Structure formats: C-alpha cells, structure tokens
Length: 261
Image 1 (cartoon, helix red, strand yellow):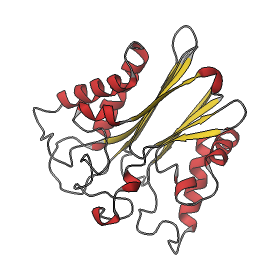
Image 2: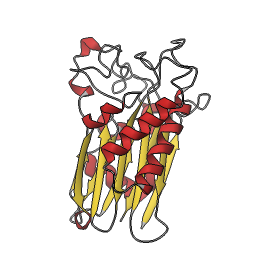
Image 3: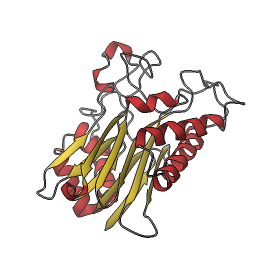
C-alpha cells in the first residue's frame, strides 16, 4: 500500500486551516483518510473564542479516531458524533448558533477487505480510480448551484447561503448535517487508488483547467501530493492578469492525500 500526504498554507504568515490524517489498522487490511478544509471567517466576527485550526483539529481528530475504532457505525454517524463532540468542547464559551461559527468541508474514506466507504460534505473532492483506470470524482456540488447573487465573491459564500435550505452545507455545530453528505460504498476490488483534495489543491482541475480528474490522479501517482500542490502554486503565480483566479484569493490552503490499495 502506498499513502502520501502533503499540505501547504495559502499564506505562510497565517495558520493552515486545512487538516488531514490517515490511519492504518494494527492488523489486517484497511485504513482511513480524512481531509478537512476550514472555512475562513471574516475578520472580527467575534462569535467564537476559538480559531478555525482549533476547530479542524478537534473535528479531524474525532473523525479519525471514530472512523478507525468504530467500524460498526456508518460514516454519517461518525460525522454526526464528531460534530457533537467538537460542539460540546466549546458550547459553554461560544455562540454556536452564529452563522460564522467555525466550520469545515469534509472528506472521509474508509476501507477494509471488502468495501471502500466514502463521505463528502461541501466542496472538497474525493477521487476513486478503478483497476482499469477509470476515475470517478465524488462531489457535493451544492455550492456550485447557489446563485451568484447569494455569494460575496467567487470564493467566499455569504451567511445567507451557508447551512440553509437551498444553499450548501458544512460541518459546523449541528450533527444533523451529516445526513446531507454525499455518501457511498464501492467494492474494494473495484478501487485501485483514491485521493482526497481540499479546494486549494483541486484548483488544478476546477480553476486552471490543466486537465480532468483522471489527469489529476495521474499527476498524483507520478509526482505525489506535493507535486500537485507545487504545480498549483506555479499556476497561481503565473495568473498575473487573474484570467482564472478572478476575485478569488491568489493562494489558498491546499491539501492532497493519495492512496494506492
């Protein structure tokens, strides 16, 4: 089995709000990958005394532990319990009902000798490659379907669209959001490799159009996650007239995990 992970902050002067982990069992075949992309709040929102990296570390730690130790619980249940645990850790000090309470996108994949389970919430991406090379992208495209009038910019969603019916959903403080995630199960014999990308890394496909998802997985296989992130940074620096980036931030936190089974 091959597992590689890389992450890079969008701005070295700011904490990386992405979070990633992989887990392998002590015995037997199987594993877990988790990728979170923290949602950057506007400055001075004041709804929570904790920052986004605190939140993603708490949520990611709970997701990783429970996904590995409680294989009897489906991933929606794992996410719901992880959100509940994280909320309990700061509900006495923070207003968790505030629309800008810390939150994150979520990708979780878990595999054993028989099946690969997956869960995707919001705009991070999971790629599944079959033994014959066909690559399937698992996407939660609700953000893409939000009217532009409900967004502050191309990359920052307004509170009127986030975690509301008709908008899109992230993992924040409400465990019930887990039931809205995109989930599925694939026989392990049908999966050769898988990868998870935060939207800072998926820019290679979604922003710069360097290739399709199959090409993205091929780059991961050849150059590894760091190679993908390095190429995205080159493309960002080269887009001086903002043909592709438009109103988005020049560099975003970028995370990629690649697994060959």
